[in-house]
Length: 598
Ligand code: GTP
Image (cartoon, rainbow, N blue to C red; front, side):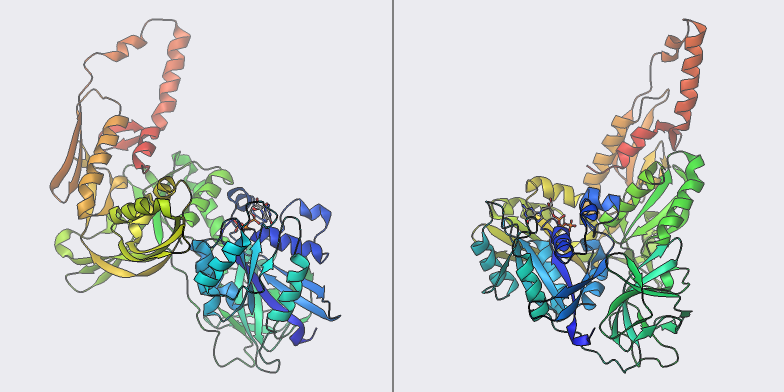
């Protein structure tokens, strides 16, 4: 194929607006998807993704297409992950494109994720083609939504594509638009090799698979390549394209999209965003914007059964093979035993990993409350990054603590505006903007501490808006705040797994509610149990559970011997499931209840 007949594009959309369905329809129309494949949406692979209805790992396809002008084109549909946690991956996938279909659900309109994706696409100067999907539905309102797109997104909608990804209506015309509106790849075929990695994953047979787009030059099987960021060299053992299954090729040229395997063992050596070049004739500079993604949210993960520790370690190692953003290190807790401190890109990433650990690897987990990363400026001038309350230095050594802030955009029907504003105010947010998207829908912009949304924000937002809000956020900066470490003491002994870093004003409320919750879940003991929440030496909440008066064990005696034995065995079993809180042993379930947010 000639370079001028290549079109690299992706589909961007808010969750559920029909990205995967449209991709399937395009594959079907061009004969790439057979009936057998149709059962499963090709572009949504992992079972978990399907269940949660989100795309996590990008998957890309080459589509041969003969246009109505009689010419043959190569369309590379580059898939993008569908969640805010993966925005860096999205930005790299978009960087590999020249155009994007902006899919908007004609019954819903512009949502927060739509805008987030549009901003990213505009950053890369992509030609954006607006598409209204689901026009087969009676509630579709194309005129209103077209106005919304013109107004809010600023795209010309005079020639808007109206499609139904479900019935296929309008998709053939859309293909023509892709060919005629998306610019052909620029780039020089005689320049030194420069290729952008926009996805990579670990294959148990082939090692690391790298997906890339060639910006300049060409790449051949057998040649040596070099990663720009770490100068590591590899020999290309396998080169190919997905169409939709993998197909080997000997050479790929400027503008093309493909995969390679080069005996790379570790995903960290072929990171998304890095540039591939030819060490024999290297490019002057890499593609700009490479960064190592940093985990933003941390929590402790502990096996429920201590003998599952090795299993958990194994499972984390295996997940990490395929997830360069997942971090973990061993950690010990007095209360929970041996476990791991784990770092995630965001809350969704954390949920997905926890679920996979429990489901695919069958380890039951206890997770401590999630924490963000704080920048702690010590009086001696040193700056520490603290993601674990246990590592916060003593108060007298701290000059100031800075916490991450995010810029958050919430789209919501106007009847819920009041609820959303009070929720954001409660969460220490500062309102930056409030705009009417139409007479019924509003965009609210806040700057808000990330820690506040890590806690229970999504659930609260959902409940105060009856599920009608959509939200997107990006990390802004670190800001000084009056943050303190709050400990929970049971009979004077701190329960390490329950310590949290909180804003001082929130500490009292949180301390009281935690202490109360613990009082409710800790069974009465033979002795008095005192539960305290403290900041430094100061007690901010206190609850007391009185000792049991009667000798309840008396009940156990008498009766036949088998029953007694059963009871004893049951107790032994129960013993294992106990977690120690200071001198008090409490049932597993109680611990979980106390750790869960509400
Ligand atoms: P994520 O993968 O979560 O980003 O979602 P998505 O944007 O890929 O949405 P998906 O294609 O999974 O579609 C979401 C839902 O809308 C599914 O139940 C589809 O069957 C449905 N859907 C998609 N396109 C159409 C359409 O044109 N008409 C109708 N009626 N339903 C559609």
